[in-house]
Length: 291
Ligand SMILES: N[C@H](CCC[C@H](N)C(=O)O)C(=O)O
Image 1 (cartoon, helix red, strand yellow):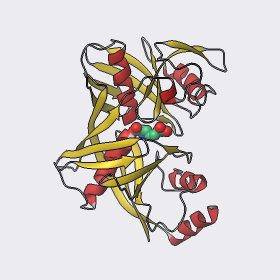
Image 2 (spheres, helix red, strand yellow; image 1 turned 120 degrees about the vertical axis):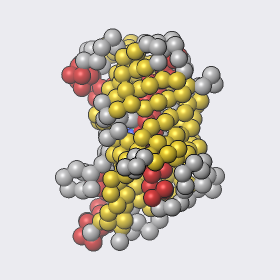
Image 3 (tube, protein in one colour; image 1 turned 180 degrees about the horizontal axis):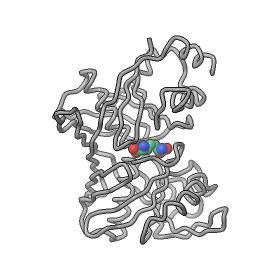
């Protein structure tokens, strides 16, 4: 019986499961099938708990296109909800999670009457170097650096690593149709060796940013925790907000990011558990044959 849990952070939804005893490989085709919203369970990604020698829990994060990510802010908070449901963690009891993008310390701060959790995560330290995000060319930091797209458009980029790579583009206003044309070209641009998550952001003084997200390996999502961290860090670094406690508003809702003086980041936001389920024997057999 392959049991799984589903939850979401501001509409960015993930399936959580145990890698151990899964009965099939999480190959890219298998991940794509599970995440498919018509022929599978449907989600913006998979959280697979694995063993860890360095933290209380280990986590691997898969995008719906089958690629693997170094970190996920909403994913980590949903993983906390999964662990809480299983009784593996308690409320107000800090714990650590090892991700491919580094160690994350987390805490379930509270649970509302209708089960909405508030979860806080130490998301690591923002890094602004071109090599940190796999951007081609000489090692440098980017301040509205021009990048030419296949379409001939020029966008001005600010790259940030949160363990996973991000590319923030500041605008005076969000023109979503233009963004939908440009974001896919940026996310798969050959200048980014590992691809990149893309955010278009409008600072709102003194402590807010409105952002729209196109995720590497997922496309447009309603929210992204690591994107919120990247947008907040870039806005503080460029002096676009005067506070270091930043509210990042995305289509799915608001996440709060504290950008410390040493560029370490604390992400806080809601998580909702949706259901626990089990794959049928037939689905498991289809996944086994995908290899
Ligand atoms: N697509 C991202 C991972 C998920 C990020 C997002 N869902 C979050 O909450 O941080 C990447 O390939 O780096």
